[in-house]
Length: 321
Image (tube, rainbow, N blue to C red):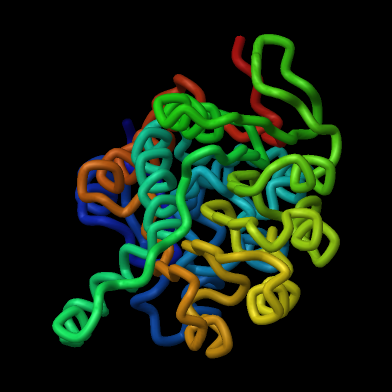
């Protein structure tokens, strides 16, 4: 592979930097004091981009500065940090990192669900604060006899469902279309799914089409015994509607790993004792993040070796031969 000029927009894991440094000429945008001057100088030479949500959004304004870019390799299964439609208009391939994080996120989701229902973080704090010396920890809710609805039955959604099947709970789902090879009950609307379930797990992609998909009506349908688990994107849930639902008892509780304006979490959520809040760590194990990082680099290397992208997103103009 020739020494192709690649732009990395923000710091990435050592495995990405080390792999690309051996194969390409890597330009580190975040290290530049004058980024505009830097892009004006090297932008025309850039043929590939490695990016993540740490940078923000790769959109037309950046792509205008990179007139010869051929591929944008994004870290993460979600890729709403890249304007894939705009990239497609310019015949630019976009890749993400699916598959390698499915099991990790699914495992984590079950952990977050149990932690939320059984109040595991709250019980930990109760013991550490010395309160157990005075009284037993209050009884919690349970996963027993619940019906779980999954919003978004893609690869990760199916992995979550497989794990849930071992807990002897009823499972249903909502998606854009019903899947013929799936035995779980299908609901054509999120509100209908929420009405039928008392746990709602959100694992649908982010972006404009799913913004505030979980709104006041959905939360009301979920009901006072309902629990919301969000491991998708913060934008999928109307955060203010959720805060109101939690304060008013419209739903029982929530377990959140994602937020609308990360890493800024509303103080109103932080102040609620009956929710579990985590700092976007669903895929954050060394093993899985290294696998994701390697896939970022491998997509770029494969493309410039003439083998095509390994994991192109749906909007990308590339098609396998």
